[in-house]
Amino acid sequence: MKKISRRKFITSFLSLGGLALAGVLLLKLYQYHRAGYSTATIMAKIRAWLRYDKPLTDDEQESLRFYLELLIPEDETPGATAAGIDRRLFERCTKQPYYRKTLREGLIRLSTMAAERFQQPFHRLSPAQAEQLITASEQAGADSLERILFIQLREDAFIDYYAQSTHWSSLCYQGPPQPMGYLNSRLPPEQCGMNG
Image (cartoon, one colour):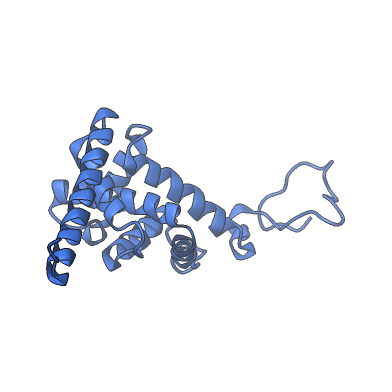
């Protein structure tokens, strides 16, 4: 029996690994194509799949912050990033790989849309340009990556934002009625800021 050198063995082993990875990628491409995804969506899913176990990139984090600031801008209460919503979502991405994958797929698709329409990354767009893309995302098909991102971020950002009692004043909400209940529940509603 002929001996194989270590170098030849490692080279052969790596070649087989490369072929296996190529096979998996081709299978993924075929599955996405059969499901009716557009080419841009397929590419976003493949890029997200290749970076599945890696943290969000700096560009993805900047795009996420920018998106959140457009969803919950600063007014008499702090905006999303000042309220720490971005940090909460980054922490969730660290702990939940599937959540990170969902956000990453949507952010990659959003970056592709920004590059196609405005020739620059999403986080470098003007607020008006970014709002056009967010509106398009909201109105996109139910299974589109940009729509999934919109729904996920809107839900998570608003839940995390209004879970903080410091933001209740903008809703004219004084806090939970417990333990005494609503003392004036038989009276008509009052204007925000009035004592009752």
